[in-house]
Image 1 (cartoon, helix red, strand yellow):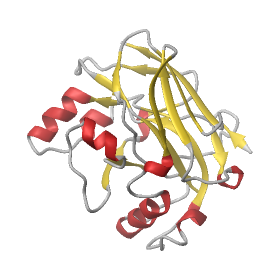
Image 2 (cartoon, one colour):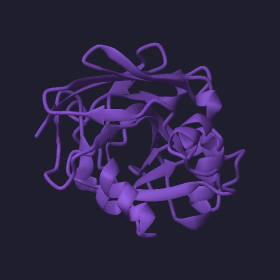
Image 3 (cartoon, helix red, strand yellow):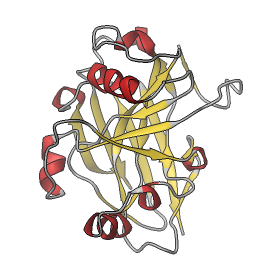
Length: 218
């Protein structure tokens, strides 16, 4: 079964956990370094938008990038779960975009400051329709892609994750209590690039299992 927020208005989303530096080639393109543990940051609830809605580019930034990702929807409360048990906490998955004000993020990195402002503007977390985990043959072998105005910008596969889905859930559950409705953005492959006013973004995971279309406006 798949569903959207409009079809299931009872869905209440909670915390939005995001993972950085989880694909080696993306680390290379950003001239960053691999880390021993997952890089974790948060987005506010107000950053969420859904299919056919609009990303609004903030006046504070002149360089905003798309980062396509596999998104997990947590289905039950969990604390300190093992890697082996981790997938049992996932209710569904979707394609999502971690929209990033790259210039603001770069300045924050330079000054050793948090990434929150660059990642958390309103509309900076678009997500597509959710697909129940049981319908997937292998969560660690899903193609993930994004097109801007029909041009392929990012194409990757979840098999290239440095930290697997199960490892991410287990790690997060040892730092926080995960609750039903929490979302986990699991990191982006290489190919991130700018988006501008008037762009149309199409993203998907798997064989069009979850799809997302959003618009970009100033």
